[in-house]
Length: 609
Image (cartoon, rainbow, N blue to C red; front, side):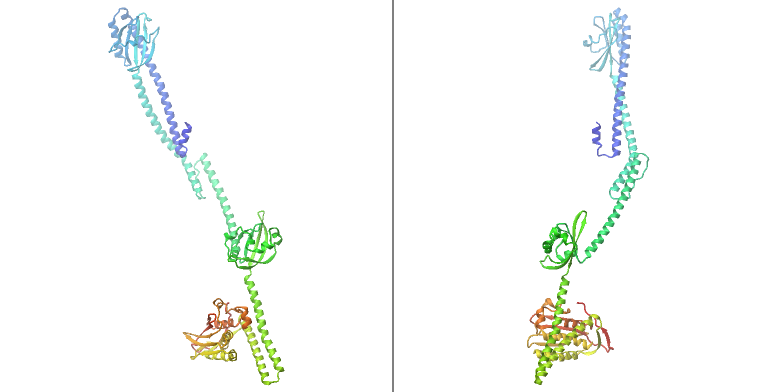
């Protein structure tokens, strides 16, 4: 039974379990008490009934002696009927003579002869419990004069006893129900009183489980539940302390990790961590930017897949021997191109495992700069040496020439070569002064046409020698606030390029336009033109499209950059429009003259390449 009760209350609350157990125990005790009381009362009532029956038969037996001896059957009939009338529990009475003949009885429908030979007494009263059509009946018999004159039988009905027992059982049932009600209410109250601290503890545990680490339980007693509440509060306090320590430790680790991640992410050098088999375990953003690959594409791959030099020079057995060494190697990027790197490798011991840290620096710009530097040195050396060789050659010829006219021609050519060298040296000095911030511009009111004419006059002989036709489209003159010498110098550089890169018997058109507060000077040629992919770089210092142009056309790559610096310093702008094979048009815009300002001196600042 206890197992079945446990099954019913398995998923119930403690309060419900307490109430159910109390109700069940009360019900069981009430039923046991009712059964016991019913048993005791039943025994008492039946014993009393039996005693009354014995007393009646004894008295009736004594009263029947004289009528039996005198055969006074009328008196005997009166005696038995009087007993039935006076005694409520008597169902029947009959008297038998010594021969078992019925001499008196109280049966209205005739004597039932099946009773004639039952429960015969010997020397004292005999009882027999019978189940009849009238219910349970106890037949009590007693001998008359020891059985010599017959016997007396009295049937004691159990109806009144059963009715009394029924009333007692109803009262007992009512009492049990009342006890059950009072007990249930009392158990509910007691359970609520006992369960209140348990419920508070349960709520505290639930809140604590939800993450409310500040949750404590009120201690309202000194019993086991109070001790449990105190233990919970102590446990919660220790957990809060442990969590606070762990959070502080985690925050320190996180701050350190974020700090290191910031440093690693901010590094321009690629950082790669390799396992002992040179497989990639970690890469920073710089390495992804250099290689073009993503994190998921490289992790777990061997580094030699991306840097083939590892496969050739750093086999697994020899990586340790290469630790600390610096070397140059190429990386194959995602698009298949090759990028030069400067590599260094170090080993570390991480939790007992050997790791390698590879630092990869992209040196493509450095390589490009070195190549540019070598080209610049080569170009400048060539451009400086060429006029000297020309001067020396014409001067040697002139010395040996007797014809004065020819000698003068050779000397004139030598002077032209000297002028060319001087112009080149002036370019270098101009760039140096711009970079150092020592070059000054002196602004004044100047005629734009005068600067254009002066520039064309300076290059007249070169234009004539090249067979170039000049179209001068400067009918209208404009006044500008500029440094005439600097602006002329810039215009000479543009015109010189128009002559240098023009076709044979080509043309150069020089003209002006006015746009609001600006004056435009344009130089249009019929030369070889410029591809669009080079237009963005032609104003960079020392930049030349390719080495073949250097050998064919000469130049040091400074002219257009100087022109740009001068124009931008005047608050103007310079740009080019060109197509290969269709010539180029250079545009310069400068501010028009508005009033008559005093001469201003401004430092010439270099433009950012």
